[in-house]
Length: 320
Ligand SMILES: [Fe+2]
Image (cartoon, rainbow, N blue to C red):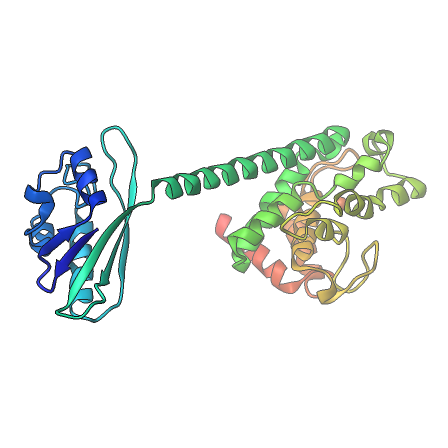
């Protein structure tokens, strides 16, 4: 810490200031006592903390000059600035704090440089850790997604494609990045409930008979049961439960309608229908994109959310 007078002349420094200067080859005579702080920073081409050319951003020095003046002129009670001060051997960060020296007599100020390296390191480590967790999480989701599609060869790639379409629609709707993230992850495993459908039914070519179809129709609820115990930061289990519901209540399994169906599921439904129609199936060829669009237009406002269909149409228009 340094004590400065109203003209920003250093009138005293503490022991820690002197030890730091000693350890860093400080160039200021008498540890800076008698030096004018503002004049020193104004002419600064080296780091204000260690006095070395430690690659610190010199523009910070000018910010400090402004802050010092504000405190000495009584306009603010405190000025703080966090800055890096890396030496050749060490990455370091400091917090500079300027406060008025509360004592009788003329206006003076206290300039303190606090080493916050340990705090910054743990912040960096926490961010890194969160990043690793997020990566592990999305890799796990991808593995599950792949596993589902391995058992259901006719719909291979379907979930990934639906996830991409969902993201494009959400972007058109202006959904925030965090919510989009959840939608993408949910979409990429939306048919997870098909794990409970016998592989023979999933892999059998040709139209399904009614009992088989009934078994397949259990997959939204099965998906919900599998995921409901996992504490996702997004309503993933619910969006999967609802992805075959329709706006007018004609869907399944719970015949939800309108706003009872969450926005994620209303988007998932549109993306799912479009991709299913325009992809190849063992019992029929892929239908042209125009037919998929016509189907969405036909059900716009009745079975499909009109805003979601419009967002999808915007996406189609800009990608052509
Ligand atoms: Fe489905």
